[in-house]
Length: 525
Image 1 (tube, one colour):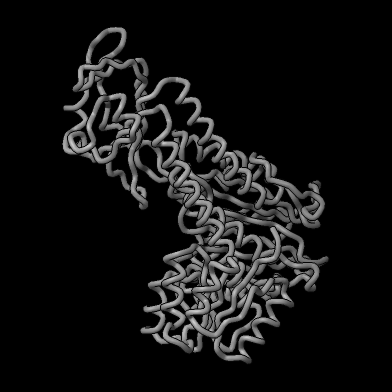
Image 2: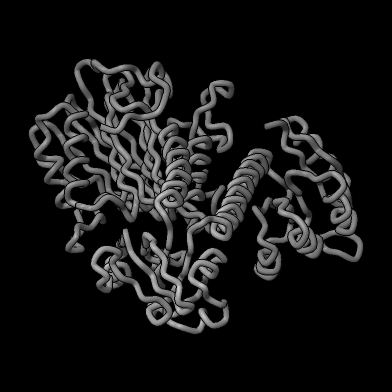
């Protein structure tokens, strides 16, 4: 991808010149600078920028907010507001145009660059999601499978054209009736009525496959079909109905291959963010795993060398799942990456990776000021080899568990809200001394909240007992055993939330491949 092309809309000459100069220095291409909202609207179709930096107060008939609204109606170009006005009334009015960020005047270069990068990545993710939805909608209308969606009462809410044709249904008539009155479903061999097991779909959230069925339609047609029932969920994950798919084996295979390909791509992207399992910095060794939720992961952790005397690590749990959560995990991994070209500092955050408090505070400043709806928890730590001291900051994340050699596991208790919730951000940094063979475990709430088939959660008490019971095993084997235990506890093939565990141990000698010599995706134990 080439340079991001940015349109500046600013009526103060000095500010516009300063923006133009800074953006050019930091590698962006400025497509133009205009002073009115009318010019901004005209420029969108002419220069097709990748992003617009828009001053809220402009000369002319259109304010920046008015211009942004017109641009939003005609294009998907992301807009960042630049303003000296941060009063609630202005922000509320600006928020209706769904901007991708705010930067206050006088602008700070690092904050501006970070906001631009977040806006570009968020826009890219949204455009990809839109393309995916359009593609899937097109597929649903064109595939040979008949798709019928009902509410929990069985009343039909959606029918694709294939189902309408195959089942000889008319749209208005079908949408007013229950699917159980429209269709008679029997077993192809016995001719007996097939039990649909809708309770398993609506109550348990399970899918039901009914192969080798015969469907009798109101028009008198008899169809040999395979039927699949899936829960129809809303954006919160609640079940609001059933998706019926009427298809033959070849079509089922085609859709399955498409879904598998998308999931494999998402899994590959997420695993590329993780360090190699068993990596070490000097005599500090690590091991971990992520068991992803059904539709992509928002958990990510990393383990890295800061310099000759310090190693850093973190775990992040992004709110939500799917493409957006994976994209945010990717963004955070970039933000938290030390930049050798800048003396090892985290470039976009302008933070010292060796200072957990500074790193997490800068993250909160960045995400809270962006006025978005992205929240995440984080546990960030630094180990200093000369003093064998571990420094930790926890923001909304579950308490880390410390296993000192010969002792029972204990939690490291420290307060702190999740990142992005409030501008009032008070998270204490704690220090812990590590002796040889001591272990530290960090985990996401999805692991302890994971429920079995009786809806009983795995719980932090059970996790703590597992940590204690594996104390005599090598770290990698201990982590692998915990993973097997929680997966067996779940007893199902899918997960409602990501389950993540990361551990470090101070050893006499590492015996592991150094982290800065072992790039590549992590291997699940």
